[in-house]
Length: 335
Image (cartoon, rainbow, N blue to C red; front, side, top):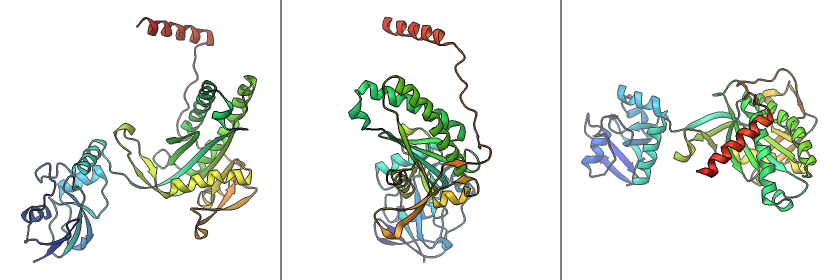
């Protein structure tokens, strides 16, 4: 008779012929979740197959339908639909109320996440002095609002998806979901942002503010993508080592006195189209075994791979917009 070695209980359980894994767990008094009653309408009975995947039955039609929605890897199975012909080892994936909350969110969002080939762009804002020390708070708010408005208008047509705002730094994802050549799109977006910054700095200097400086890093590789929770909507965010490494690439600009550095993995994707006058070694995590060669990029050749239309400019005149704003402000005060 086959056995199931079950974690986290660390128990070996016998399973009868034609008995599902769920039925075997319940028969041995293991309180395995099965919110839908074992009919593959939910995924609360999911288990991770650690050993013996070849001894598991093929997914049923119902399980395949749920897998298509949640994009499970092959070693994650529904216990209510899985039978075995030999010994297996499993880890139960829903063991408490918090696990159940996660499953419910995944069902609502329609995906669990996974691994994805992405290009990441990290943009850091620098100034002649620390922004929040050299300006009053209302000046800082004004400067950063102007900058982020410009940045988002530049990044959006190239398919850049904002991942996080960390202090003054912006992390942006470019993936195949938004179009081809994510690295090329990231580089074009970065260089276009540098050009737009010139106009913004002219405006800031007219108001007696110090000009802003940008330092940027681009990395390319396989990242782990996931939804970070209900407050983040359905957006898929990149987490893990790739994010840490692109931050280090961006920070390396301070030592190299450059504005845009790209990792070797990213550079290889566009090497025949970019101007790279210098290259350097960057150490990841303080480990000499994790050195990465980075390339300074100052220009790119060819046509920009724009994948989305830019926001249309405001058609109303400035006086008309001011009048409309004052009208709305008056309505708010009345309320």
